[in-house]
Image (tube, rainbow, N blue to C red; front, top):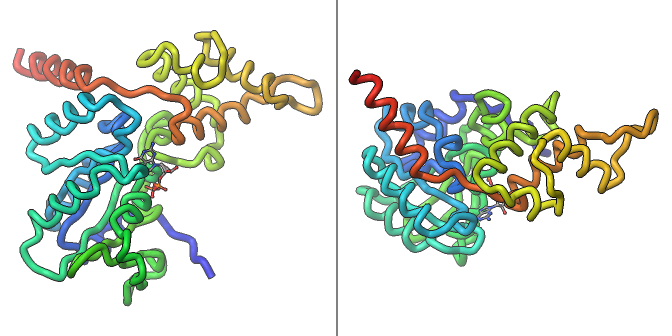
Length: 277
Ligand code: GDP
């Protein structure tokens, strides 16, 4: 029987306390929106070693991944990047973990917002060690899903599926993996997502849907019409359905864009300048 997992900071802390090293997985397309400062503070206050893992680098140019890595390192974080789905970067991640572990056996907790690729990373690292998994004894009800996976000699991983609360405004919640089915209003975040996509990749909508249009509402209408999604009552396009599709397409990488690291750096310098003024 599967139990419902309740996302809470308490259950996340429960898991982190039992780990020696914590990975924070972020999405290479938008690492800033998919990182959690609150999670980073929790890891630091529990005195655990943190490694930031920039995942899905197959969706961005290599130099973009490199630049994000440098930005995080400049902020004092150990950072690696990888493309877990393609099993790229697993050796580097394993080495980074071994570098910070000072006592074996060691447990690595894999944390981060939903859809950043936590399970994919564990699967990529499990490899031939896949046989041994076991539930963690004594975990409270809401973390019965916490599983221990053997990923090497004296090295284990715990995943934290659905444990981190997804916080933020409508767009942030979507970028941070809240499933479109759970959104009361999928249209507003989908419109914001399309605006962001078009800002960073003017070809994003054309490439994903073959639609040459820049007004997000129009785009949703056209997607709905193309797929025959209409209200039964009056035949109007069902834009809510199109909005959910757009959100899913962002997560699968079909609607493709990435935030350039230069913009983040420029913004920080701007704020720094202002605060000194
Ligand atoms: P979790 O919710 O953090 O455990 O994320 P999952 O491991 O379930 O991955 C979420 C989605 O991202 C899935 O559709 C994965 O196939 C995809 N994904 C994971 N890693 C990568 C990657 O390196 N590149 C790409 N393009 N997609 C990935």
